[in-house]
Each structure stands twice: as C-alpha cells, then as structure tokens.
Length: 211
Image (cartoon, rainbow, N blue to C red; front, side, top):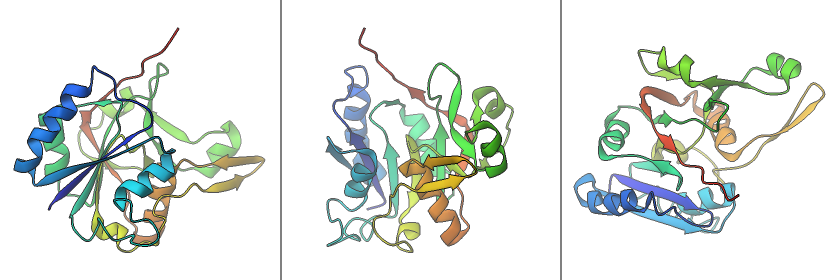
C-alpha cells in the first residue's frame, strides 16, 4: 500500500466536511491508500496512535512497514481531489499545503529564530500574503500537520514516540512546543530534512464557534 490517510478526530467532524471524507473513502482504491482515524485523544497521543495503527511501543513499525507515505489530514481541513493529488504527486519526503490559523491571517508555518523569539515572545510565523508571493516550493523549519505528507523512511530512522512535545527555554521564556513543530525539529536534527511548503496548495480551515 502506498498511502495511509491519517485523520485525528478530537470530538466530531463537521457535517460540512463529512462529504469530502466520504469521497476520500471512494478515492482510496485508485490511490492505493487506506483511511485510519482515532477519536478523543490529545494531539501527540492521537498522532502516535495513528502512525503506528495502535501499535505504540509494542509494535511501533506496524504501519510504517506497510506503506510508503503517511498523509495527515486534520478533521477540520477542507480539501478536494485536485488538492490531494497535488500533495501526493509532489516528489518529496516531507511536504505540506498551508492554511490560515485564525482571523489574524497567521499561517501555520514558521521559521525558528531564537533571537527573534527573545524579543517578541513568539517564532516568526508566515502570513498568507507572504506565501502568495512565493512562486516555487520552499522549506521552513516547521509546519502544522493539517495537510501533510511524510515518507515512512523518515520515521524508520526515528525512535518511538515519533511525536513528542519539546519544552525549550529561550531567554526569559519557557516554550511548550507543539507536537507537529517538535516532529519537524526532530526530523531536521536527525536527517537534515525540512518540510517543503507548496505555495499553490492553500487548504481551507473550518473553525465553527458556539455562541
């Protein structure tokens, strides 16, 4: 099998997005893929469960020995077949689309610069206007995993748990690094591979609010 489509679901999937996941189920045979989901687990726990198909410490290679790529699709991402094809067909061990985090227009990709962090208390996140100026795919230090493809050859070089949450001290700040950012940093240190962002691959990010 070539692709494992991994969908972490914390509580529910919006009814607005359910049709695309039903479509994904229909696309799986022609894409040589299979869908894996998990409900009710926190971010790092859910990702570790999914990329091992529940094998955990006992059988951490259970899934990665059977597939070529892990394709992460968060349950609140909106995508179509053309966008999925763009991600799958791009020749890279580690690549991603991009999406806006919230109304601030902040994008879930960033450059790790500790000197800037000391001054501003945050890393240098990109915004959509900056990405739209990029004509070619580009590397970043870390990205969100909402729409991301990772070669299983990368994970085979890592120790389980593959997703951890780093706690780093930078100047006066103590930062709790997210599990996807920690994964990107771990991979770069181990293999010198960084995530490649495809600037034409913008994915919609659904955030529904109760008032």
